[in-house]
Image (tube, rainbow, N blue to C red; front, side, top):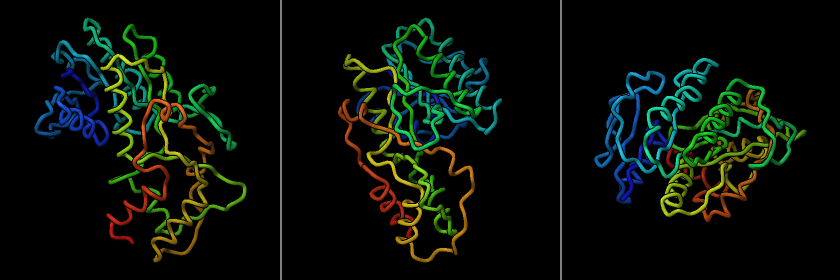
Length: 283
């Protein structure tokens, strides 16, 4: 049994906490709210942006996983909750002998926008404040004395994450040419990837510094929206999707996460969205 702290026990972090606790580990979840996480998960109500709330963290931890979400989409919010927040936690745990730390990041650290393939070795020169702050946090984790691993997720979808479905329902359209490539991962697979990485770390298996976690099939925005509209059937007339939806035009490789031994529950958008559309009563 390991002692594990998950900082940021929201959708992904909270479900991961329950998964690891069910596997027999002693797990604490740190979050800003006082909402319970699970019967077997200890709740720590704290705010990573406020060091005064980080005084009484569990001792003798084996694993720390940082999985926060900024409460505001701004440069200041991202700086406070990704870069500064992570540094606050690392400082609060500096006297502990952790086996491994993890930081949940995003493919927004990549700058490639012309349909290129990217992987963990690709250059990262983000232009957005979000990408810059996440990259700074990644670098802070990897420079820490404790062995650390960054996990970059692409577009997460699943229960409660239905933005693409709403775009399709309201007639969102993107021309097929030039192609705009997109990448996604179901939230169930986010939890699965993180759980596997934690178990590998506890087993003493070697881990890479960075993993890019995305499903097996990059797809064009045109293909995703048109497939989804066909599945739903009753949708509004076509109109162009916002320009912001077209920004991340790249193809992400998941070869490294497959080499680690992870098998995706939803290997492409059709499998994942079909289940989600059924759950929502749209097909």
